[in-house]
Length: 113
Length: 105
Image 1 (cartoon, rainbow over the protein chains, first blue to last red):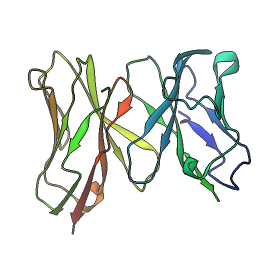
Image 2 (image 1 turned 60 degrees about the vertical axis):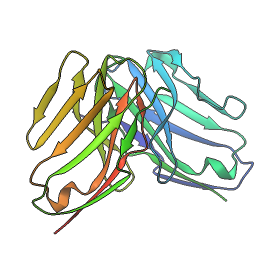
Image 3 (image 1 turned 135 degrees about the horizontal axis):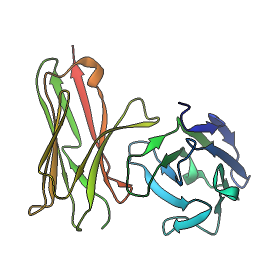
Image 4 (image 1 turned 120 degrees about the vertical axis):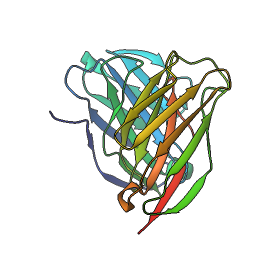
């Protein structure tokens, strides 16, 4: 069974540039999550999708972050413009149901210089 | 707040010893999950315990849940160097800061 796929693995950009991350969840998983994990901290939930609808985006900095999940399958997370404090690992996860076990991708490590 | 607090922040033990990590929370929960993370990348699910359960086992892992005290614990028995990782509790898909476990050979 294929796991959660994320790309790219690494991204280095300068502040004020834009960046996008892609995630393809496990087939059949209706729920998709994006997390931000700053070094030394736990993952912080940014946004949760159920199919192609947003369930929770209360912690998403909407002035610069956006996410979409068209067709209820893969998803993109965008940052525009990036700030130094956005340097983190961005993790995508999926689950069969909204309260169940999460399957994580390997993440994208973003460095903002 | 909707996230747990793990204790201790860091734990260092010798191979073969047991490791216990605790998670406290403030809200009512439906279930609580424990995850492991190696090298700061993808997390791996360990155990899910429902609010009506008091204890669950999986191999060398034992998780307890005390809803009256709003706390959970993760016990790893007979630890191995490969257990070195960060361990997180999670509920409502929110994670705490984690416990960094180091198992010395």
